[in-house]
Image 1 (cartoon, chains in turn purple, red):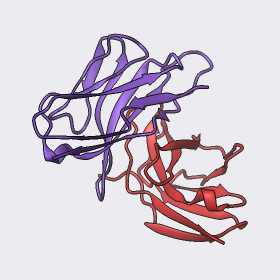
Image 2 (cartoon, chains in turn green, cyan):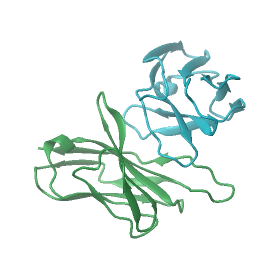
Image 3 (cartoon, rainbow over the protein chains, first blue to last red):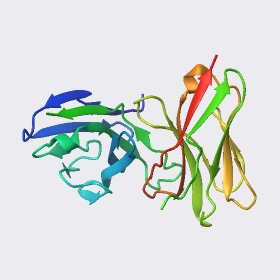
Image 4 (cartoon, rainbow over the protein chains, first blue to last red):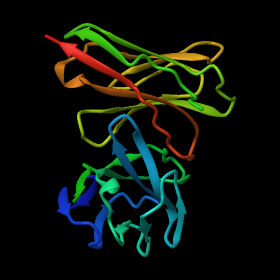
Amino acid sequence: EAQVTQNPRYLITVTGKKLTVTCSQNMNHEYMSWYRQDPGLGLRQIYYSMNVEVTDKGDVPEGYKVSRKEKRNFPLILESPSPNQTSLYFCASSSLGRTGSTDTQYFGPGTRLTVL
Amino acid sequence: DAKTTQPPSMDCAEGRAANLPCNHSTISGNEYVYWYRQIHSQGPQYIIHGLKNNETNEMASLIITEDRKSSTLILPHATLRDTAVYYCIVRVVYSTLTFGKGTMLLVSP
């Protein structure tokens, strides 16, 4: 089954304790992206990656890092989490220009992060 | 600046057609109209997209006006499971997906 998986689904942590949220897709997609969703602010893009070793900032990258060492994985790293990073996070992936493909973005189930 | 304008909320009776409007008066010639929906706190789900012709798939129909300045997403027989926030997004293919506030559709029995 084609899917995007995220782990963990729920996480409560404390300020300053480094954490990683993993994202994996099984569709051989080139493009992957991270969003955060906050009440009243909607979905905002944090980082995206067009392919392995190619990443770029989205609209709200401050306080986050990403890496794309393998095509299927795109982890989101919070080196020193703060309470303002409490949010619902979504990973997404899509293909990029392969013949016959579309650019439909497939989203993961979300990770609800609370930073105390 | 918002590229699309949608009503904040709409109601629909179960079994009836839900018609969700979207205005995109500044759309460019190479920009498509995309629709996604998000059921409470789940990941957004792609519904349909189009350039200028009307489109239909197993989930919905998309009607785009001839001047492309507005469009309507039609769910032909809404069910309770269609209750969600619906996002109309205008974008060039393979560009960043930017979500606005969307329309909260409430389907009632």
